[in-house]
Length: 498
Image (cartoon, rainbow, N blue to C red; front, side):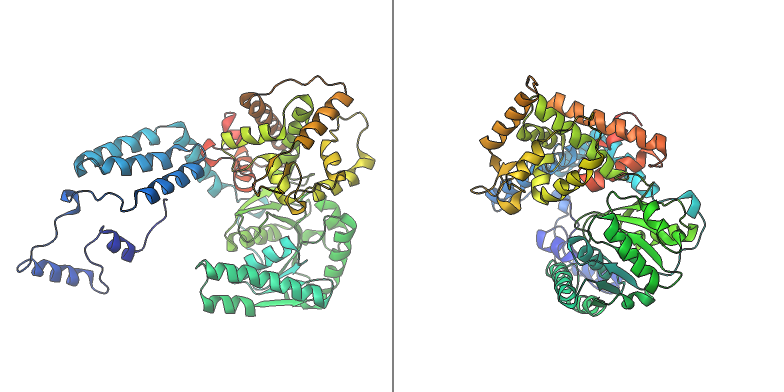
């Protein structure tokens, strides 16, 4: 599985003969002296290999690893190395393993993985903040106790940052506190947090309906409903209670942060911090660089991301920033393909075959179709009538199919938790094509992925040209860590040669 193991586990597996504490050299000498009376065990390299005690469990683990690999070669090579070693002497097994490593090292996937490794370590830089000291980060505020707000609060607490979480009233605040505690309890159950640390984190959380509690916070993140007027009202309240040097950040996914900042008394302290859900798990953080943001405010945003253990990617202000703008582009292209002849399960299968953990329409069902539907309805008034618009998703929502939470969306989950292809959806898609006079034609996997990748790369080029993304690497890091693009392929822009 690739996970490191404890010394005690190595002892149980027979990889070492003894585990000692204290003076290693002294204990090693004691073991050597024992050899005067009792022969030491044979070296590992001369011992016969021990086959798995449970062959069925071994095969099941192989299947799980192959499933998680999703096209990556190295996990499968590791399995083969283990299996070869069961039928060879140590010298032969080591030689075969070395040959396999060399072949992998020189392959395209290793080149791509090296690119991602270094890209993730280079992207968290902003020229305006170079050499600038960040402001203090001793206490964090979060506005909004929904899924995103509670995830952000939990991420702060897990990083050892005392946090104030504000909701609209006392009842909502206590409910939000309960959701944060559930996250902390889950971390404790998984062994990521000791019981003592869980208690410390819980004690460091203040859940309240009173914005005055933000008076001593160093950075406050707004994570309320994605509506400009609502966010402006929140920022106006924060403006009145926050310290003059406190950083104000919005978790908006799409809205104009420059416009939001201009509604405050000091636009220089406003930035965007776009977390990805679940915020306490996902490694990606887009730091949206507003026009008037002060250098030390940007430095503070970078320092905050680092404190949370995030990969922080700076992005300029535009609709969707880096990730959601590219997502919107290839989602639109996928919808075009639905009208032209492809079906949702065919597009999803093509994406999984490419290396994504889930397809686009599967993800939509998982997250719920209503949020995107509400956004499309808000955009309807300003949409260009000449622009091609696909109404299939709207028809699905109008039928009350909002994804897994309602039992049906793009797929039917009523008798299959994984979702099954629904003839109703296929009939709807075919009827929409006919209504628009579009002659449907078949789409194979290569054609589907060719269209998706082409649009992703074209949108990436536009982001670079507009200065929204600082480098092709930034785009690759965002798409890999936020949207499931297969790491072993190197990223959207890497695949196009840069």
